[in-house]
Length: 412
Image (tube, rainbow, N blue to C red; front, side):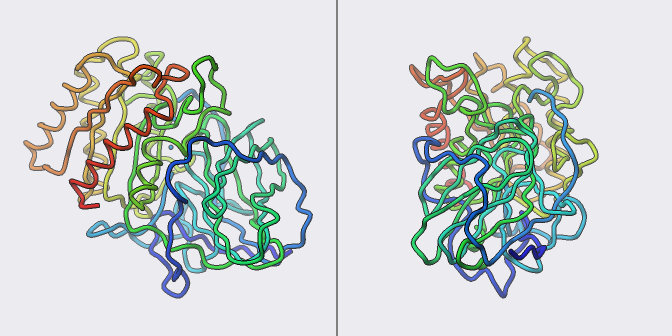
């Protein structure tokens, strides 16, 4: 088994000219109805492989209580800068694995933690295995093999997992997508191995890029819950969130920074320390030393979906507007040409949050920034709730709202 340390095709880096000639994107098909499928434990790497893609990335994990995915060269004017060698900006000189979301180098591979992070590979062979180091006792990943969606459950520690097996010999594409969020633990990919075949250059990255910043709704908290379920990481599913569905159906890549319970100003417990404006700066959200290189992912659109937890203990008042204003200034400074969307929460009663967002939009307009819009996500209706949050059906409705806005504003 070859363990060559292949360089990353980084989130947000431009497509290597000599290799990514095959069309396609990181996400397969539309929005499957559930994450059901075969569950793989720590399956031994039994079959002989002939090509291995090792990642590159780096640091360690803590936890908190709050809820995010990624990709490539921006369409139109938002072209992403080339990746460097610092944390969060792996080299894209030699293709093999196309990483999704914020990924950090380690000495042995690539490490990530936000929801929706993972990778895409294309290969010729009969199967694919991955060697992973995970810190969660149980973690859950959506694996898409040639448009067929399956589920892989991992255990803590270093293990080998079958991502695809017993395939017809030939060319295949596999997407590995983290369903769970940062507080569930970190993931390190130390190798990706092809069974009876070889690794090919990954599918060409989409030119449309979306960044989403949010809380438990954006994470996918309880998306797979039934009405009588209690929350468990097994029914948290970022793959079926509004942003993931929108990205797949629009042919875009999405980078999600989201954490359950977190806010713009304060979390659901009323605490103001370490809220999303601070976590937004990180590659591994739970580690304050893990800094993201924003030049590696330059989105066409940024959706800010925060406020649910700020309102959990009552109207946060002007302090919320001040914190939100500062965050928007930061985002606009990083992405001068991106369309900014301020999203109302389907979990906040009344128009208080929506009124603040309208005020924030007007304030930006008065500064000459007219590339800002408000999205009004409507509350779930009837059986649209699960585990106290929007369920998969409601996320589809939210996706339709977001898609329409992106189509109208960006011509997608």
